[in-house]
Every structure is written in structure tokens, then in C-alpha cells.
Image 1 (tube, rainbow, N blue to C red):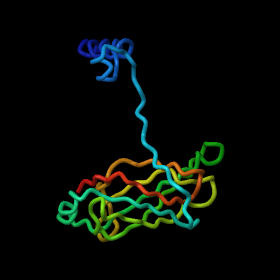
Image 2: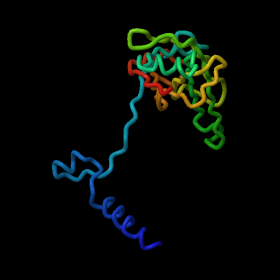
Image 3: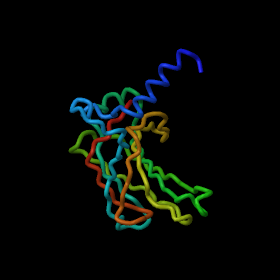
Image 4: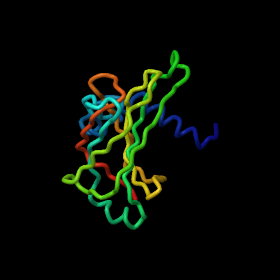
Length: 173
């Protein structure tokens, strides 16, 4: 180890042993240790149409002009299907389904309802997460995602959901 790295290593080790990751705990004189971040999970009923999932959501109104300037004309929904690792957890067979619609609704009063094909058969695949993207006319979405994956928690494992997400997607364009 280089001598300049020694101080960093000692500092990290002492923080891990004695420090608190919570600024509130430090201000209150408590030590609570590290706490794992809990991702929120979107509860969702099973879709009434077995062959299709539906995603109802809205995007932030501030993205409208930036999307237009960047030539982005469609909204894309990416549904991720988990297979629980496939055969004995050794060969994951996760899949993804895309669906697109015209980019013409902005703000909480103008919601999208996008229809996506259900998860593929076999390997116990089920709806797991979804994501929203801004795309061009040719359905190329590049790096214009609207945030991190959002977990889906249906009432039971299913290949299709009817999700209503009230949290705005904040898109970068």
C-alpha cells in the first residue's frame, strides 16, 4: 500500500467501526451504522388482459422543449421480466419488452397509458421492473432514460400487470 493510501484506509476503517452513515444520527449524537436504501415498490394489480401489461404514468412537463430540440418524438416503456435464474438458478432467462407511443403528453394532468406485450412463457418469467425512455422516430432511445428502474410488486407473480404510477418520470433530453 502506498503511504498516501494509508490515511484513507484508516479513516474508512474507523468510520465503519465507529461512525454513523446518517447525518441525523450524528446531529442527535446517536450512532446507527449503515442502513440499506429501500427502493419503493409499485403495487399493481394483475392485468385483465393476460397477453398485455398496461403502464399508466406521466412525465415531467419541463422536458417538452428539450425533447423537441433533441428530435425526440416518442416515449418508450421497457418492461423487464425476471426468470428467477432459470433452471436451478444457473441460467437466467430474463427478457425485456418494449412499447412506444407518440411523445405528446406532459405533466400530471396528461397521463400515458402504454400497452406492452406480456412476459414470455417458460422459465417462470414474471414482471419485475419497468423504465421510461425518450426516443426518436425510429424507436432509438440511446441514453435518454427518464430515471432508474422502478420495481413492480403485483399481488402475485404474473406475466402482465396494470400499473398506475403517480410519481413523475424526470426525463433528461
